[in-house]
Image 1: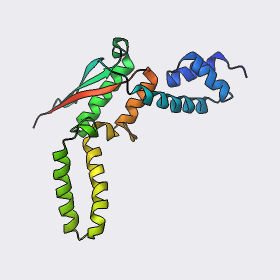
Image 2: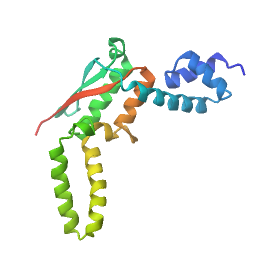
Image 3: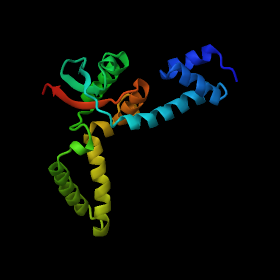
Image 4: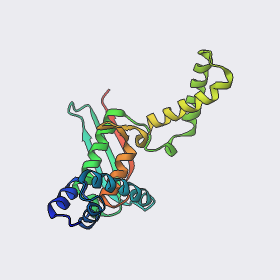
Length: 196
């Protein structure tokens, strides 16, 4: 099936995929734009996961100051090349993440960064609360496991529901950007300032 150039152009604008990828996927889906866009995203995420092991030593420091001037965030967003570091989509991702941090105040980038003593202290507090509630002793550990998992995801940036698209996590948004920009992208660190 011959695919007209307008459809290829439209799909490219929708997904930022390469022209040849757009043409190939449109042929595969018989010209169905929605199906083609969905397939490109799925395949892009799979490729993105493979790229996440690559070193990201370039990047940018991106800032966000809330409109009232009382909250500010600096985010170190890393990528593989300075070419991507100057890309507007990369910088926009950084601004979106900084705005998310301003809104949600995460304590760590990822679960591996959480200090084990913080987790142990939370376990003690939650265990005492469950016992106080009268939960059966044989169920406490199972309930506690779920509560600790939720606690860690609440305080870790990559596991939090993204403020602009709550059905996705910040980690999902970064993976989608890796698929679009073709390089590994990682949050190096962040600082959130707030006037008391």
